[in-house]
Length: 418
Image (cartoon, rainbow, N blue to C red; front, side, top):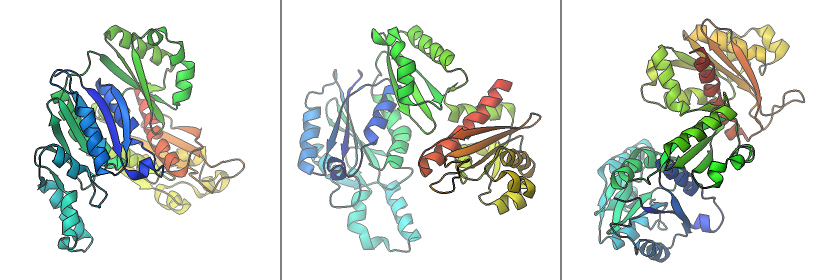
């Protein structure tokens, strides 16, 4: 089937009232762009069944087999009275709500964990775990409510997903992308991407993108999305050589800062070299270890972690010298070095990442401000290196950026040794 005209729809009165910000739409558009599909428009709707129904009918009215429409909608799948997505789609597709067994089992398990009887909330709970009878379920691996894929009329397809970003992103990647690829051909475009670490969207555009004639004359299109500690840059063109040239120019401009999909490439590198790794973390509280173990099969290379949040643990468990902590402080090159070296011995790994910093909002000093962090990388047979960074972000973002960046720093060292 031809490439579809795509609209992304976010529902929720909290969005239209300005109480919450719609982050789902831009994320979805960026992911679709990377797959070769361009979004025509964004639509934000309140929790009003008539408005939702009328908008879906209008957007799908001109669809046909030759000119398909794809509507990607988030929100309205919960158990409360203002969640209308199931009701509206059932009406538009002449369906009835049917129980999704997988979601039903998850909901029952949740109620058991809470020590509550499932029957106490049966009426509202069943709405949350039901889908239209004329639809395909999109399983929810991180929450309760399933999504679903429906055909509103010939050539008009609707994907409904939860509004909770964590649930939506997992469902999109795991369930929706395979369906979209099966149903539609992407535009006749060649696409490729790079991650650029420590870069901002605005700076990248100002110092690089704005000077590229191949983008000015329309021979290629580009997109960029800010992530935790890096930006993801995607190029598309009908001419593969144009994309290859853009990728090469980007690598030349940002030598050492560019990677492919680090979160896939780093584990592959560890497996290929048969290297083991562990983390000794302070301010990130184990987030670097979490990223490493998010991937299935991580037990092949990841052996363990120590969250040495206090100086007592740094000294008594990790083996950082008391004199080092007294002379230089917990947030220092010296402490990060000993954390990495001693951590590798403690865990019995070839590689070790150490992280010690000031996440804030308190704890800063005139010489070591909130946002200061030291990241150490121990590689067996090599001298341990420590990088000092200053990342003046809010606490949660600081921790996430530091954790992801620590993996990049280790990966960058390893690939230079290859």
